[in-house]
Length: 105
Image (cartoon, rainbow, N blue to C red; front, top):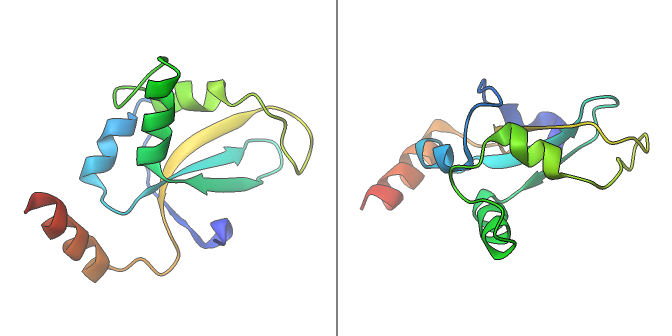
């Protein structure tokens, strides 16, 4: 997936992983603050992994998720991450309506 074309949602680090229910189809985008290298993850899988480790769940803030990433950036080799929600490339308003209706019903 091309992370450069992802549409980033304007939410701060105070947003929680559980807020993804308001943004169906959004993915967790982990970005290096220094060089811009990025990778996206499925939010539900991140929540499940935090529960397995007994270190968080849906109320975990995005800033805390970014601080938990301990591996160095493949681009620059340093460790300074930020976490955001982003829609994948090609995600349209029709996709948003479809997923909203699926989760609601």
